[in-house]
Amino acid sequence: MDAPETLKTTPLNAAHLALGGKMVPFAGYAMPVQYPLGILKEHLWTRQHAGLFDVSHMGPAFLELTSPSGDGDADHRAVAGLIEPLVCGDIRGLKPGQIRYTLLLNQDGGILDDLMIGRPSGPAEQGKLYLVVNAGTKEDDFAAIAGAAGSAARLGRADTSEGPGGALVALQGPEAAAVMAALVPAAGDLGFMTFARAAFDGTDILVARSGYTGEDGYEILAPAAVAEALWLRLLADSRVQAIGLGARDSLRLEAGLPLYGHDADATVSPIEAGLAFAVSKRRLKARDFPGAERVAEEIAHAPKRVRVGLKVTGAPAREGAVIADDAGREIGVVTSGGFAPSLAAPIAMGFVPPAFVASGTALTVLVRGRSQAAEIVAMPFVPHRYFRKPAL
Amino acid sequence: MRFTKDHEWVDLQGDVATIGITAYAADQLGDVVFVELPEAGKTVGAGDALAVVESVKAASDVYAPISGEVAAANPDLSDNPETVNDAPEGGGWFVKIKIKDPAQVEALMDRAAYEAFLATL
Image (cartoon, rainbow over all chains, first blue to last red; front, top):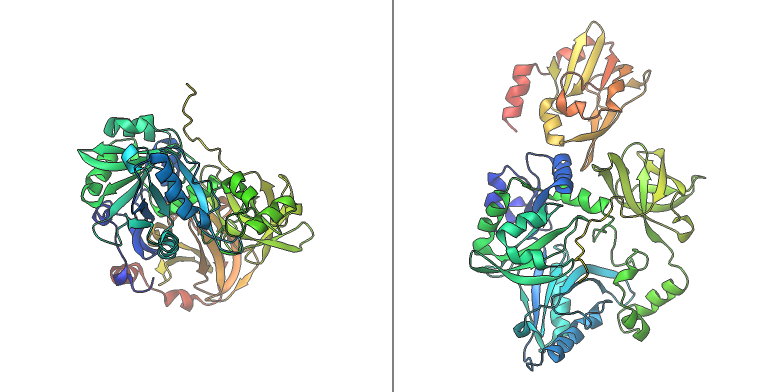
């Protein structure tokens, strides 16, 4: 906890303090790791009801063509063409209102960040992309994206680092939709991984049906001026509790979702990270993203290591714990691990060679010098419950 | 009952000291999900690693406040680690240590001194 006086705060800082949030430094921001409810109960509440998270430390931004032609599809293709050289996803193919999870890669196919890219639905907003990048990498990400765009597009940050900025809050859990329906009726029309502009008390906000918990829910970008009002209105619903970063981490771990900087970094490829779904088939065929040769090679043969899920017996195996085979030979390392409140058992993610990835493979993890039983299990550890719009 | 600056409590009855963590420590840790305790018969010196207490978020070491031989480890904590939060200074005890030097216990803070110490944090 060095130099806490230099920490940035989000537009919801006063709200966290009023709730008794335990503030910790995270990616340069003072963020609530938990509230008086505690991580365990906050986690379970989100799985049963609706949890409200401040994720304003992340990096929302818009990439917007400097001179759009007015032809929506052509403008989308143009702006997509500016960012596609940096990522492995199909951005050109996004439909209006659709969001996609994608990866920023380096020339070796290593992951520089994972991010969301969305194509706005409004006809007046074609030629514009909505981006949300990770907190710890946002300065580098934005520099790379602005650099790639050159003078053809302008990168406008929507976080709190520049100007008044905005707040990013997430409402997650099986009751999130019912809560939002009362406050922002338009949110109910959104399918999973779509987003739209909506109105809150007459103010323009952006609502995405997405999240990082494995539950149905929303991520909402709101101007800082209305952030606290939105937060308080959501929290006034008895189905909603404020949830800190501690439970956010245990929720995403149970959902099998990687945390950048831990379960993925600049040495890890999309295939090693188990994120092949984020590699566009079109882009792979064209080999037109950074590190495409490595990705193609790892798909054709096998990567050296693969991200897997482990169910652990005994003490939680945390980041850095050695993974060994049943003969005690070191084969890998835990990259995220802890106690899974929904399962009342320890779980972990880590990297092992492909020979050990089959579900049921018996392994061991080394915790404080002691060998403990662990078993490969399929991820997610807890089934996803994303909203699927009924087919028309 | 005596207390340490590491937020352990020591309750000496005869030559057996029961040791646990204080309500303050349990509250700071948050929900305890796992406790690793030493085997009976293990000899520990004051300041040695005695136990590990794990919350959802992190693992924390608990150091022996006094020297002696572990006479018993709390058998309830393996199935009910949350007892550490529910009754830190009762059912949530960690170990009983057979001590040789009662002066080590006497040298620790009494409750008033510990509470005064907490007030400075």
